[in-house]
Length: 207
Length: 198
Image 1 (cartoon, helix red, strand yellow):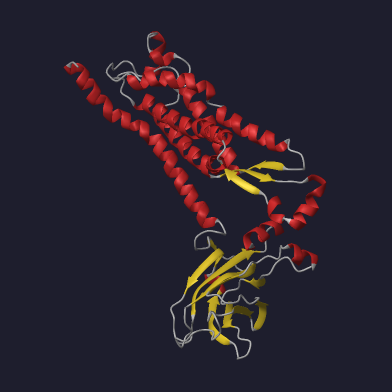
Image 2 (cartoon, chains in turn blue, green):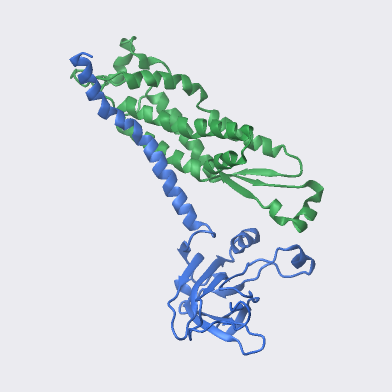
C-alpha cells in the first residue's frame, strides 16, 4: 500500500462515521417512541400519563392490591389452612360507597378485572363495567377501605387509603405504602379511565 | 431539484426520525370477523375477536415467533426492506452530501444503493399487500391503517425527495473559488459516478 493510499484511507475513515448517524437516529427515535408508548399504555409499567381533567368524569378501577405478609399487628392474616387473607375493597366518594369489590380469597396479591366480559356474565345480564365513577374536582377525595374478610370472626381491616383525586393521573397509578400499625397495604394499582371516549376504548382500558 | 446542504441534512435527520417512529408506532389494526357467526363467537370467545394493533417491528417479531419458514422468510424480507435498507440508504445519503470529495468508496457504494433503490418502495408494497390480504378475508375482518403508516410513508417520501435532490453528483472539492454552485458543475464532468439516478 502506497503512502498516498494510506493517507487517503486514514482521511476517509472519519467521514465514514457519518454513515452511522441516520441509522443511529432511527434507532434512537424508535426507542424513544416505544418508551413513550409504554408509558401511555394501560398495561404500562407503573404510572399514568397525564393529569385528570378538571370536572371530568372518570371510571375508577382498582385492579390490584397487595398486602404485607403479616397484618398491622405482625400477626398472620388468617388462622385457617393457608393463612393468606381474603381481600376485598370498598371505594367511598363524597361520603357514599360507590363501589365494592368481590372477595379474592387466600392471596396476598388480589386482582380484579374492571369488565364483566365472560360468557356467564353476559347470559346473566351483568353490567359490562365493574368500575366506579367519580368526578375530578379540586379538593375531591377518594377513600379506599381494604379488608381481610373472615367468615366466622369480624373482618380485619387492612387499612384505609385517602387519595386526592386530582393527584391521580389518567391511566394506571401504581401506589406503594409503608407498613404502619394502621396500614397493612403494600401496593395498590388504580386505573383512572376517562368516560369521555368510546365504550370499546373504556372496556379495553379497564380489562 | 437542488436543495441546499443544510436543508438536505435536515431532511435526512427528519426522515430518520420518521423512520424510527414509523417502524415502532402502531401501523395497522386488524379486527377479526366470523361472518354470520360473529355474535356467537363474540359471546363464547370474545378475545378471539379483539382488534389487534401491530407496528412494523411488532409484526416482524410476531413473524419470527411464528416459527414456520414462510413466516421467517416474510419476517426477514420485511426486516430488510422496511428497516435495514431504508436506514442504510439514509446513511449513504448522509455520506454522499457530507463528504469532501476526497474519498470514493462511499460514492461507489451509493451507486450500489442506486440499484437497490429500485426496491425502495418495497416496504410500502409489502404493507399494501398485508392490508389487501386482510381486507379480502371473509367474515367481515377488516384492517385499518394507524398513524404509524403515515409517518412511515412520510419517511419514504422524504427519502425519495432527498435522492432526487442529490442525484446530480458527488460533492466536489471546495477548492475552486469561482465555483459557487458545485452541483451545477456536475453535468460538465460526465465521468463522475454520482450522475446516475438514484
